[in-house]
Image (cartoon, rainbow, N blue to C red; front, top):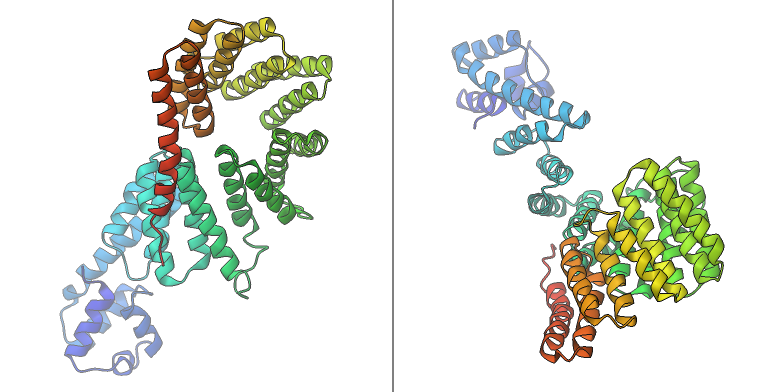
Length: 440
């Protein structure tokens, strides 16, 4: 569609007139240049004078102005709605702007805004498509900051879709991009610290979920080091310390783990994030049990469960119950572990994703107690729930447990099928990583 500026430029050239000649006595030459490039909208009075000088009827310019004004109104309304957080209302307006973009707008920013709206609305597959478009535009325009931003978003989308290896690749590419531009004088680490550390934490969590604790440990440590001495970004610092503590616990480095979990809990409490603070206390309670402080751990778990029920957050209740069940199971009392796991499952909705972790632990406890039939049923339920939740590492563990149970019960064919399924997934990781689309 022809813009007002393009229409004026066309008429000026047809009249064999320079910008200086058109501007003489009316406005400056630079003003005419800005009007023709659609950076400035002229007043009605100026349009009348320009039409007279160009030797055309006023009506030839006003329709173009009307169309431009309508587009400008659509754009301004979309930006206002975005500023207010009304993504659903802003999205169709952004699409209208993208269908007929004004030369003065940034197509890259509009595309990124549309992707952000889709992401915020939970339309992840569509969001990924638009983030890829925004990324291509950012690469083409040499916008390093936006390349980083969209890479990070693509990593987050992949993680939410359960595509851990794709998420890992996106975050690695983002951090590689950062390393290549960090020396650029126009790209300051302080201004983009949150973006970079978010990518580092995303990478660390993905490594953790993929069963690579050493790689996760290095990534979490880098995030902690990057934030050392930072006065702001307390939530990111708390998240980095929490991830580092959880990883160290898994590696058996309990004293160091306790130090980082305590640091995370303190930050969450100071920031008045009660949900995260209770979650950290539950992790600390499980660590207490592993260090032999069982009575103290039980008291702490009881208080955590009481607080999570008071807050009424099912996600938090599920996390506390899972950690408590794992604590009881580690004590080595099969009867108590079975009762705790069954009670925990009863307190959650049947399809809650945390039930998958509980059913896996229940299957393991039943198998150790000699209940092969119950163990198999629990393991099958765990596999289904964990696959639906997208928890890849936990799902693999449940599949392998189910294969072991089937083999112990003499059902060798089913055991082989489940083992093959896990092996097939591990093999597909390499294919997925090699076939990832990258942009120059």
